[in-house]
Length: 416
Image 1 (tube, rainbow, N blue to C red):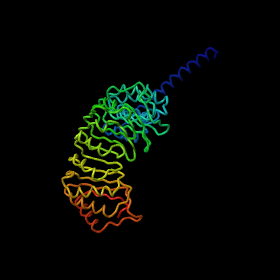
Image 2 (tube, rainbow, N blue to C red; image 1 turned 180 degrees about the vertical axis):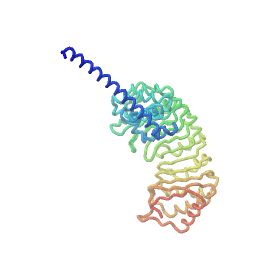
Image 3 (cartoon, one colour; image 1 turned 120 degrees about the vertical axis):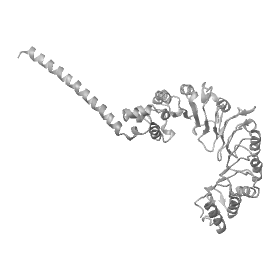
Image 4 (cartoon, one colour; image 1 turned 90 degrees about the vertical axis):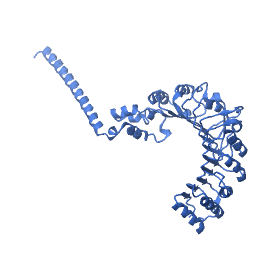
């Protein structure tokens, strides 16, 4: 056989090998498609109703820490399982709607992934968690372009290198939201439980959120931007003004802020005086249902005028409160049934010592209001001595009677 004939035969064999390899690749591809169909039929996730499948995927977002846009974390990781999962994950906007951004450690990956996340969230209400002192203007501009879909906004200022005064321009840059029509929850604080930082533009931010339902304002100072005219949040249902041992300062808020629909109020003694609280309740006349005092330092007698302005109140809580002071509140509530007539739940969390006289006052109140009272809880308290306090037989008997009647009665394990 000549050289030319051998070369021609080699070329023919090469062509046949290529054809066979193409056929083999096609067969493997077809087998992969069959595998996918088999897996889809066997996959219990795929057989679930779409809403349950979405709920299973949502459980992978166990915290906001896993919500930083990236190509390697959840939910992006779910895209690598199979085509069926990829289709379901991409078609579940809620998976992409919780976004956490720490501006102190921005990455190129986050910048690249953020537009994709916002696009996949579609029209689902966004939950944004923003951490930092100076917010990147490009990112804020992108976020505010989706302002019509922001339903929850958390702003946390970090502890480290925290200046005393943060100007608005330093935080927002030149970007400001013009309208937040579906924003329902706004939380603004900084992570130092013993600190406070001055931050402007709070009223401006509130003014563009007409449908706000919950506002938490903690460890911040808005001075010098004080309220000087009546400021109404017509739909706000829950307002938290300070926490235990935290200082808040909002000049003019106590005098001009009006919350006519408020149902749940949490107030710290370091943030609002009793006179301010009374003025606020008189001005707003809210249908208050729950009143929570953090770090109670008010004299008991000063509280009763606020009770008279809260006729619809059903739940009263004292956090980090002196049990002796709470005891002086319980006695008038026992003797005067017209005071907080709808009260049915009382909760006390206190690290202070509790004496037998307190339990006598508690049992007297619960017995006097037994037809209405549903729950009494006391937690994180200390007995008057190192040994667990042995409640008197009379007190135990009254508590047992109330429990038999269906009252939710919970007492810290320091007692028996």
